[in-house]
Amino acid sequence: MKKLILILLLINFNALAQEPLSLETCYSLAETNYPKAKQSALVSEQNELNSEIIKTRKYPKIELDAQATYQSDVIHFPTENPGILFELPNKDQYRATLTLNQLIYGGGTIDAAIEEEKAKSITQQQKINVELYQLKPKINQLYFSVLLLQEKKSLLLAKQKQIDEKLKEIKAGIKYGAVLPTSDAVLEAEILKIQQQLNDINSSNQNLLQSLEKYLGVSITETTNFSYPETTKDLSKTKLRPEIELFNLQKTQIDNSSSLISKNRLPKIYGFAQGGYGNPGLNLLDNSFQTFYYVGIKLNWNVFDWSKSKKQTQALEINKQFVDSEKEEFELQTSMQKEQQLLEIGKYNNFINSDQTIIELRKQILKTSESQLKNGVITSSDYIEKLTDLYESENDLKTHQIQLLLAQANYKVIQGN
Image (cartoon, rainbow, N blue to C red; front, top):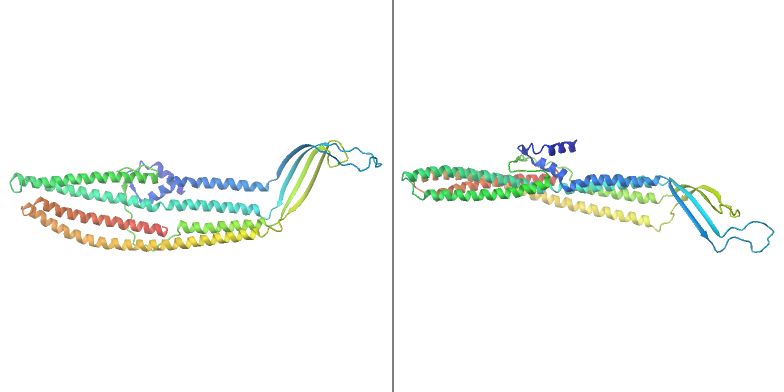
């Protein structure tokens, strides 16, 4: 059902270009369209084929064998006239046989081998899931960088609009001699500077969108609306990281391999039958072409393997210790990353509180500057300086708000959410 929803989402993505693109949607698209995701189907297919190959061990083995030989000597009596009349075998002999071998009891090795192959497949599948999960921090970086550029663009446009309005007032003041003649040049220069900044933002935004497209496998345009994730207040929720699940699956795979080794030590029983045609047949004293057959049962048991199985099992146990060590290291690194992100979240919350206070103060200062500019107390340059101070403060606020969202998103990824 999940795959069907994602497919429908891809088909209709162009039609939904004007709809908000959420961070969760980006995650889902990356998990479906990133080249690594295509390996999931290949792993499943490979597992089915290998399992079918293992199952063929249950089927009878049929072998056809034919040979023609010439030998230097044949059976004969040491005396020339032993008193028994019979024809000696020919030195040229011929034989064709059809042999059938059937496993009757294999000690559970076939089922154990299938389980081992299944465990390998699940582990490989989980490795793919881990690599896809590790795309999330990269998508976070791109996604919130686009949001930040959008906010900067919005602030620049608002600043440009405010300067345009002020420029009209200044030009009217110049016309009536209330303002110095060159006052409008400062504002016009600032508008040109804003235009340069907008062009730079558009170029950077295009690069980010192209990079994001490669992860998502869909077309994203500048008109695509990126939605804001909600600020997370409860950061205590955690889920099992795919890496932890991978470590557990690796240990399960080792256990399956160990089980297969122990079952390989058990005796195996085979049934066999052979039919043939040759000269001579089973009766060596009948020097003619004959048909023949025989059937039987045999036991195969490697009673003493020089502790090979024991040493293989010990090697597998060491592998499990390696996995435990890697898991412990991963949990330590994850704990350190969580602490670091929590510090980042706290830092940006403090920044946001100060930014809001600074903006209120900057607005009051700018309001006073507008009145002073109108009355000719200050120059246009002084006014632009105060306006730029307000813009930079608002830009700092938006930057810190988005950095807070990015830190929270990264924290949730570290937690496994």
